[in-house]
Length: 365
Image (cartoon, helix red, strand yellow):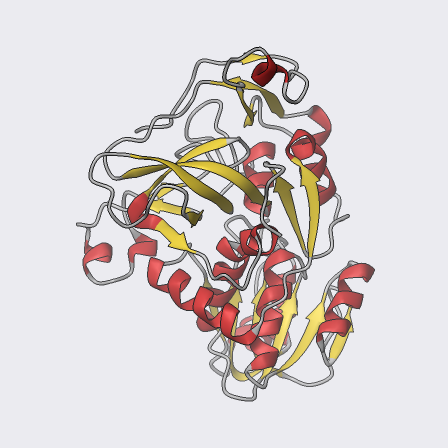
């Protein structure tokens, strides 16, 4: 697959503009996963990478910004087993097209596009044929199977790239490409009835966008999270109730979404549901779930569902809705040189809303 570079050397990045003054092309700087482990062990390495080359049906993007997702943290720390060595993380990529692979026709050079987590599917398995490509038997994921956006250049399949609404600058658009899309799908999986009561467990990048979707649709929202700053953001956005992660909301919930990767919250969220309520678990990784008490937590037709990636149709529909309702991503911006600090801050719950890496100084505001 194009873009899979496995030969690289760790270097100190040259001073900005030095290569241009010498009349040569500046090196492509990137971060990749070296030895997975806790962020305290510095699992990321940085340095120069060879220029990725787009293959048939692929775009080469000059990365403007890249969102920082908890999935990147799971990959760096080894919660997700690496699919290959030296992977560049990042799957909330906003960039401009600088080269077209053979057969590309959807986008033009210079056009702004987004690349998301789902980077490819087989198109022929039983799930792809029935329209549930998020369950594809041979998927390709950006920042896991192919190099992602913690780099100045990235390759993406044209068929899986998104046109981005003009309503959003680059830094606001980035978290929409995973946090937003996955939150949108999680909300669908949670089967929230019109005007219903939604509970949200954990309140990071995806949750704060999902809450806005639900509130705009007329739902009442309760947020349970251990972060005081996240509770303040939830209140500013219009949450009816905020409390600690294990606190019970004031009224039984019609639906709930678990964003925190904490399996011990599953029983608490199920107990908070009204009869017939649905809990959707939105993360790709979850710690061990305790044994469930059937009578207290599942009886009376309560449902427990998982969320797996998204379809391209989910992404297109969500981006249109986000622009129409004026979704407001709360972002904390880091320079590319501080990608490791961004992930450490994420690991230690020091980020409210979404973190974004600014890769290019010319990122659109």
